[in-house]
Image (cartoon, rainbow, N blue to C red; front, side):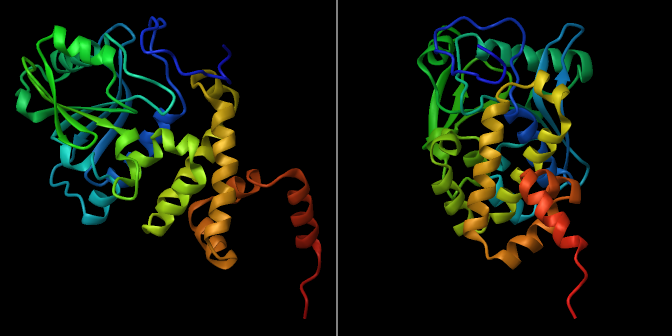
Length: 292
């Protein structure tokens, strides 16, 4: 298997050594920073010890940080589970929960607290897992640890038992839809039903989210080889980028689309989104004298 062609691992397959990161991880960090930046410090790939153990995302609430209602709607499913300290682990649309993931999550939390805030009361720290679904291997591990997954709402599980922290698991496969816009972006539906997903997000008033996602993917693309070497799924990312451009163009009037892109994308990012033929045509048009 090459870095450009990841395949979903089976739920029982052994975990490869080290932490596997895909482009979905920095995408989530970017989207959270966009929405939570005024209320939370958003850090990614946070080391939890002297060895290369990393939390996907650490959210630290800023003093006086309050979330406006528009942010709570866009982050529905996530916003209501944020605490003063929140550790967030992501399983992207092509990944799955395996046996061992739960203990790893607890180890991250314990190591982070031990080496950063050793006197932190457990009630000030929440753990949040985003994954396509709750799998049998993960359930088996929970059972072995004396922990039960209690369904609070469709797709939202509270993990109860001998755990020091409040832990929730959100199934993106179940929660995908207009009521959970950000979770929809990281759901299997974004891979399998992109036209429907984009149409639904636009219909619910989340055009800015879709455009921002395109902007982030464009930045990953511009980062080049170094980014590709660190994150899996680049061919998948490129296909999503092209499809999103196509769907945005369908949903928005040309003038509205142009204004939206001018507000969110730099000239370099806009240029990179064009084919060589389109760039050459645009260059020729710009060289023409303005019509009187």
